Image (cartoon, rainbow, N blue to C red; front, side, top):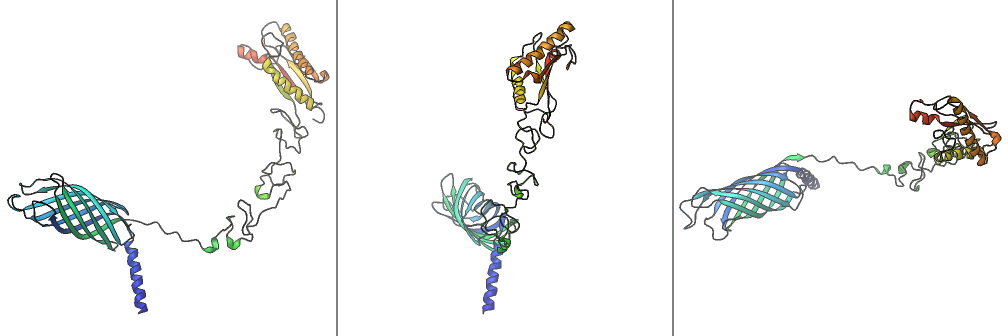
Length: 392
């Protein structure tokens, strides 16, 4: 008895699995009766038809219907002789159960057209409202029953159509493969990336960096205050590091602070391995036939003065130049006046004059062609060479 009960249960389970299929289309063959509900001009008849399911979804459906109405007996005064009819419908179906269920009730609404072989009867548009049931016998066969009210649009007449038949679903939708549940041994309760079965430090706070055993990492091999997993510069030789464990370079000269013997080097100055300036040249440009420092060049003069104050062993050589316009002897004197103007400005800013040498070179050493105004403007200049002293 127990064996038979077990086999029966397995059979039901197997059938349920077969019925729980998703299809996109269907074909139905239906037959039944056709009866007037009010003052119709026909008597009872029988029908035979077919339906094509364009959409066979879980909730919504759309299908085309054709029905042949056979041997319709006309009522008295409705005309002469019997007749045959044809009806076509486009129906919308609303299902109350999805395709995984064996029994699926539904509601139906449709619009269509009918015509009759008897010329005494009028052809015209019709509508339909109804309800039905679908029952899945297996994955390729459904039983179907339906009742609906057919309403003629021209005179409002109502006719009851009741049918039953079979439905064959097709165009099956393949179900996504089931994902196997993760075994309990793969759980990671504290979400630290180490599964519980291997986690020797459970309940690690969120965001904590852990080792292969799930325990917080606190190792700092180079002692710079940044733990190894976050240290982008391992084996650093200083504790003056940023959040990535890399040595700080405050003045951005390419020499880390712990090696920089000349901190706060202005941007753009070339430095040696100790972070101190090496021969740097700045260009200060002058208007035509003028030894007055332009207002937009004063800022660069101030930067030179500030740097020389911070580095008292640095000296400066000021080299004045002109373009090729005018006599060479005049240009030589003008170039010296330009260099001396810059020297005076630096002295006024607090720099010892003994640290500054001013020279004039006239038209010599042009840095641009003198045959254009743009080139001549570049040649009217004072070059400031900063020379590091001992220890710089």
